[in-house]
Image 1: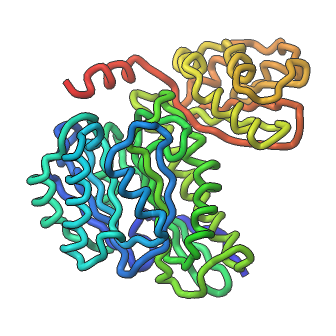
Image 2: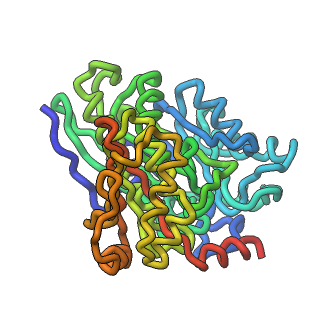
Length: 406
């Protein structure tokens, strides 16, 4: 028997069995509210199967290169993350610093260096202050309740930490999936457009885990847009330590689908939180595209609408200019025909099978004056469906990014 998902209050990456985390203010990050938690550690009490997806940006930092190489081995036990400095475009010194961070974690907790992963996020082109980081690593205290501190420490321009966890049962065993994410800017669908870390106490085969993470990423984190930019540090990791017991999950295992469902639920919740907290945003935009000929078409259209600057600013100004949605669909690369396409903004149909409706546009404008705005499109080409999330674009976005380092 399989249970429904139960959402855990204040759940996060340490909700599953066998996980601990902690964070400190090490002095790496010079911006954001006090206290500036900026160095965090997540660790399992045993080696865990691991999978990862990383940025497709061709400029990447040593943390991405190191973690990508080690994830390929399929096993990890700890993750160290710093915010405030991306350690990108830092040459050979940056490579040495990344290796040093991993080595310090391995030494402190008695782990194999190959089982320690890294994440670094923040300003590009500045060397890590390694003396501060070394002191911070020595000072971090891990605990079963440290997930909230971990979630706060990985933030950069985020205004709130983002974490969720669910419990489910499968095959007579109870398991938990927890997760946290960070990102308010430089967010665009391109393989883990942020930091997103998922943990579970379910046992899983590393090969199965890799395939599962790709599916989860494509349905969640890769369907988020804030500003059409993709960071050099983007990393999504999934750890399964098996502390909940049972045989490793593979295709056909009774817990395979329930675990996949739980992973996707947590990842989608985090994706929505990322979009809601976009830099300067005042509205979450949810875009549902249905009636597509293929799943790829549905995703292309939904992502293009959610990423369109003209759609984003339309929402900001509550301007019922629904033609912008059509414009975005038309350039998305999805199969689309004007005569079969319908569009809704909120509950109001503005275009029905290629024919503009006679609705009072003041109602459409009012439907955009909300904290969450839903755009729905029916392409009339098939039966595939996809959802993307974005946010509106305001003058505050320009202000934040015009003064990011000054």
